Image (cartoon, rainbow, N blue to C red):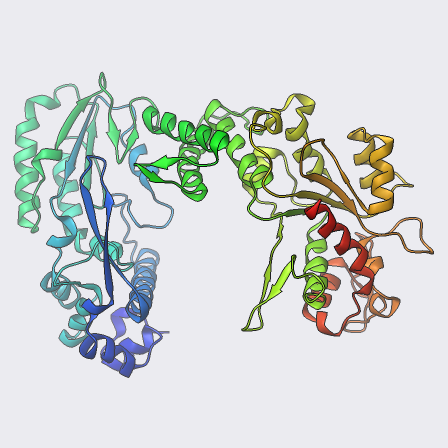
Length: 554
């Protein structure tokens, strides 16, 4: 397999980028790269607007492929040549603004330096020259020219293209090493996040040499074709708020308090009114989740480093706000009705049944013109985040108990349902169990634990669903009983001919532990029926699907 430094012809470059030469040449020489960009603006912290040029169509695909190959080659150099650095932190795997800021926490002095017009300074000639002359590339002139054509907009590197970040880190390698040499001379730590250069020290007499350091730094930056933005150069002592790429670093890494308070205020407005604004424009729930997730990344980083045990019962105040938001988004204001099943295989059975019976349940599933299906209900995904914030296990019926607690305040957890009750639930949330009420199985245990009233138990038996909490859209549902059975699992809803299907000479076994030489388990069975739904009889699922639909509509 060729790496990018092995490329010697245009055909080889096209092949590396997974595109034929003719379409590549059409983009570069006929339609021209500039025609594939759209320009828009996003607000900066100071109120100004940042211009973003984002590629689209084939050019975006080509840039993404180029980015992947450049990263592959950098990984190769790291493994074979030992070439790696802790200087650059932007757009690099396993690095972020957190890793960048961590180098500078709890320091006597922090210095922030910004490079002016960073992306615009990296022009066509610099990119072409790098790939021609750099020792690790030394590409032919026509190949270097094509790479510059792929990555440039109006003659310079665009801020918004997928290939721009990796190009900036390549171009700045020499700059980084030379600045590091100067930083070490003055006993400073140095990192770079795109155009943000940060230096820090605990050296008591550093200020005696500050001007000397800045003079050397400025000369080196200018020698590499960049200019310092004097308006954004700051030296901050530990007595004042020190920030690195938007994070405070005085004692530990943290999100600015004003950012957190504003995020919390946005969430409170959402809970009460159903809407909120960001920078004077209507915000979306996903935008708000992005802010909470960013805050939580910093909290998670600090949790890892404090040596204490953390779980859903020991959340800090910021984590509890995120927990409340997650409950609101997924279990209170869910965009579509949510089905929460005992196990992961149940979801495949339901999806397969809906695909086969889509004409009977147009309010649950729709078949599109291209033959694909769109579910009008959602199925709960058990993620690490949900495990941490709600004590939800990867599999099993205890998930329902863990979630139900936050509707009721049981076991000393917050009663978010009551907190958010200023507005009604958006859509139904349905706990779906196998119909097992005679033995000490999950459904019976849940009903006893949740203290279901006689009326609720009767309703569940007759309708296969029952409301769990008054004035809510939280429901309990279960599979129908078959005439000859006192209890049923979801697999019982298939005809015996389906349950007896042999796969690779093996029979279906429901037990959690079985002889894999003779049997296959629930996971393989569910995948089989999902992949062969069109030839399987799902008539036994009709009462269950009716119950789900009726619960949603009630």
